[in-house]
Image 1 (cartoon, protein in one colour):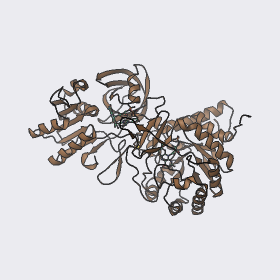
Image 2 (tube, rainbow over the protein chains, first blue to last red):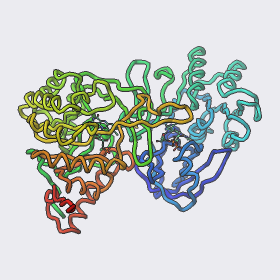
Image 3 (cartoon, rainbow over the protein chains, first blue to last red):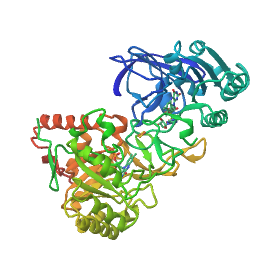
Image 4 (cartoon, each protein chain N blue to C red):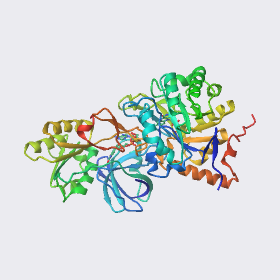
Length: 251
Length: 305
Ligand SMILES: Cc1cc2nc3c(=O)[nH]c(=O)nc-3n(C[C@H](O)[C@H](O)[C@H](O)COP(=O)(O)OP(=O)(O)OC[C@H]3O[C@@H](n4cnc5c(N)ncnc54)[C@H](O)[C@@H]3O)c2cc1C
Ligand SMILES: Cc1cc2nc3c(=O)[nH]c(=O)nc-3n(C[C@H](O)[C@H](O)[C@H](O)COP(=O)(O)O)c2cc1C
Ligand code: FES
């Protein structure tokens, strides 16, 4: 973990309201899939924005973000050459055990981006099935990355791209067809994760979810970003997470 | 190289920069980024006798130039701190300031007795705006400030006591004086100002607790004014905070009457804020021919009106 002064190499639109920003830093960064960075957008914005690290290619780090509020809007307006501080890599990330060969990725909305990093880290080594849900056709992105999975299912809420269903339903359909993974890795909106947790419990599947929470420090010091664990304790999403075994957290 | 060390009611801080309570935990995480022992002091997350889970999330929101938080004093309890963190934090060489909170006078007495002689200083949080029983009840009325100060002081025979004042009061000078009358060794201020931020799409406050404590760059002028008024009212040392982002900000507080400063929200914006402020203080002093940073305390001259 280090605060990098990162230079923007490219900042481009990849789908409706979604951008991909690539930074160059002065050294190779060791990143585990599912880890994130805290991007300082500067000015009157005192909090950094937590964004999943999507791609790492040596000194080039790519994040993909949806424009939501003022901070991401500001990020969108920045051009190549501009410099920003990025604190990274943060959090625990996804980890696939040696014994787990078949990996299912279930992602919805901006939740697909940390899963792209999983795909990039484990492709070739593991047998990966990807189930990604988008709101509609205009939101669909990352198809060339997704096509590198052993199996890639892309669906949309309104049926304008692929089948009309969400990512969990797509996963369940394949499960019913006999494609049972050793582990499920997921990220997306809370209702999606809740539904997936139920499926995983019902089917006895090991499932890891990456959570979102508003953050202060991003490194585990301030206890702003906690989530409730099933054992009654709180965990810090930024440091103990963002990835948790679904059965250990209250969703 | 200016001499940055300061004497805060008998304890020597290697420099006047202290990590503000609740923003740096017990120092471990920031120590992964830089040697936390280079910071003058660390004020711990607010400790209570029993562990606390704190408020529901979201616990934080942003508004231009400031943030709001309502963590609600989540902490592992004083015993856990003593067992797991204290020795390590001491070993770093930073001054250990235990920030403590309670619901009742007995809570304050018990936690002070427990920490007496173990830490370098106790900072009594009677100003947390985010929990019904976070001590703010004690922080509003001057009589109760004095009362809780007296009880904490009587429980501390070896360790100096600092009381952290709430800005959400009628007169900061009166409350500062009340703390001094209660026999404390120093005062610190300001804790956060109570505020609200609304998500207009959802027509609800962003923070689960509805209101939160406002901190960060935007509160600095209010904090400087309050530190000045408090410093004028008392003879004991004052530790100033509220929106400090750079060395120049820290110097404003020193000039207004502070002996040392605390840095909170700036640690979130820039995790290296404290080492940068310490470096900047040294450079500023050198540029201005100031040999001892302590010379700056209270040098402010008001304009003639
Ligand atoms: C670990 C993690 C990974 C993430 N990865 C991605 C990603 O790859 N792509 C992507 O588009 N988004 C991602 N998000 C969500 C992203 O952080 C928010 O959309 C973003 O912070 C919104 O900032 P803003 O300035 O546009 O919104 P504003 O509403 O102006 O933000 C105000 C404050 O609230 C915080 N905030 C608002 N929404 C969220 C949220 N959903 N989660 C956390 N903080 C929030 C902001 O960081 C900021 O501090 C991730 C969140 C987390 C916690
Ligand atoms: C996330 C957060 C948690 C805090 N927790 C505490 C606490 O436990 N006890 C306390 O006395 N003050 C607490 N504070 C207040 C700070 O110590 C400080 O008084 C305030 O933030 C003003 O300084 P700043 O503007 O530099 O942040 C907290 C502040 C923040 C932002
Ligand atoms: S954001 Fe500070 S502990 Fe997670």
